[in-house]
Length: 544
Image 1 (cartoon, rainbow, N blue to C red):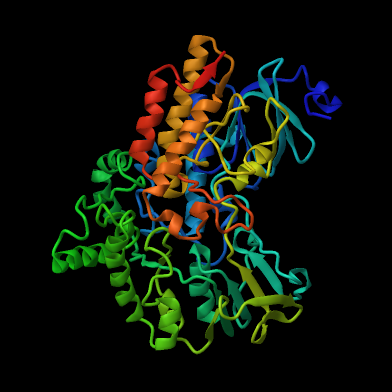
Image 2: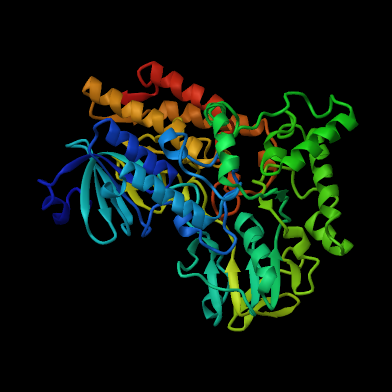
């Protein structure tokens, strides 16, 4: 029986109908809440976690910190940055939580947020042109617009290892870390995965674990974070440039204050090319990834120059040549930068320690998990703690894990069985009045959250305001526009090196997930497309 027909919904027929229900209290969700309230909309936000912060509520494992530098990773609203000061260039999870609490206090957001409330299902009521939305605790709400801000990493991926449930030690996925914390001290720790969370956990565990075993499938091409402390005086000087930085981040590829060199890596003399790479390396963060030459992500020969520099720098930090071959092989495992680089502080030095071992699971596969630890082809690795840094069903998983049914009764998960299909990365046909931010076929994983929250967020606010002014009750992407957008993204992917790697950018980290480029590369080009459609009365949508 559908939600629309259910007795539970019927008894709520006379209940308040919201203008919009937002799902998710991360950067995107709370920006939507703030701005839609400013525009006079009746709006509420549901958040599955017990506090705001989105991924920074769930990511509380040791070492968890952001990989976008300050002030890029914060809102550009002056009321929020003028009197707020960070303690580090790349803040840790607990400082980000304090920032969200500060934002809450400044904007009085909490009165319209319901925490510990997970949306489980939603169905569009065509007779009334609004959504009927159900939570796991049995409540039903109605809203004209259903705005999903579930983020790109809200569905943890746990591999189907034989015997995983039999392990008698502590076992945690990094995205489901216990809020009360857990210590590595004196324990035999195994970490599966070497993406962003894996790198961060490995660095911390190496300091006080009795022994640390890192299970690596593909070497991570990690970049130096170049972390540093920030004092108030330094930030007060920095803030003179904030307005220009925030303007600039709207106009760059990934929403950073980093401009790339528009030349080809192959057209400059080798010594000049090396000088640029060294400069970017010393700047740290994503400068080396984003600030390189224009053809790094499209030309394999150009890309190789960047990989070779990375390889030389990294191998010099690893004492054992055999380990260097595993961690920084002379031949690239994939083109540089087509997987999201992780940022590290002392990751490669970890493997010089006597209490750290590396297991290459391509050569020595994990066969099963047993009560005492992990059994590989070469034998048993005894463990007290098993950390699954195995990532997420990224970009689409947060949306498809909700039972969302469109006008033909088909769920969003069913519609996207053969791949995500959207228009402008905001909507999908058959699901009227449903909009999603930081989702599939938008910049998402190629752009930092606060930038997308504001740039994409303003587009959504403008759209809802336009519909209110025009007296329209319903907006739906057309199948034709959706097809055109999907073809555009596929053609862009074919011009790049991204399909050359098995990454979450391509959906390749999840068994059986369709292989496609899930993110639109380039914020300015993307927003040009979105704004062009809006300027033509939301071309590609049907408005009633």
